[in-house]
Amino acid sequence: MEPLFTWSGRIVRGNQLGRTIGFPTANLIPGDDFPPGIRHGVYAVRASVTGLLYDGMANIGIRPTIGDKILTVEVNLFDFSADIYGEFIVIWFYDFLRPEKKFSGLEELKSQIRKDQVRVKMLLAMRPKPDPDSQ
Image (cartoon, rainbow, N blue to C red; front, side):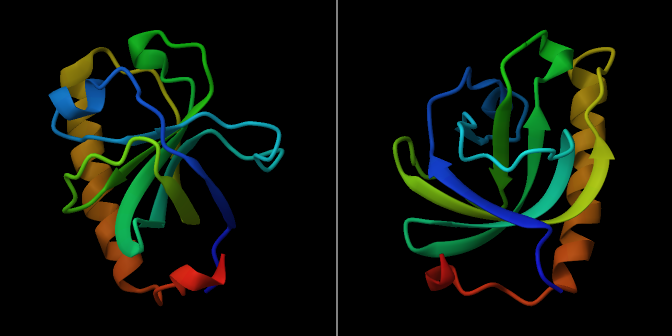
């Protein structure tokens, strides 16, 4: 199955909240090249960074639980912990899991992210891996 869409960009330093709750993210700020009409929410993704391919999950939105207002793309790469600020990343967005929502706090958010991660791993297990050189 083909991805819903593919997008790429440079990883920027975020507020590093994801790392403090156990889900570090690669953050990107969408620019004019970001596909129009994309739904805000959580996606099952695959991403290529530093020449390697990783499974992960991404959130597109304004992060209402922490009161942010800036549109960001945050990608949590599974089994990954390197410093990749400034690196170029290609992201294949496969499945839309759920819309972005405001949680009552960080504990509720962490609980939902854990559930999302289980579901994403099941979904991606059924998808063929993309060719990282195709971008």
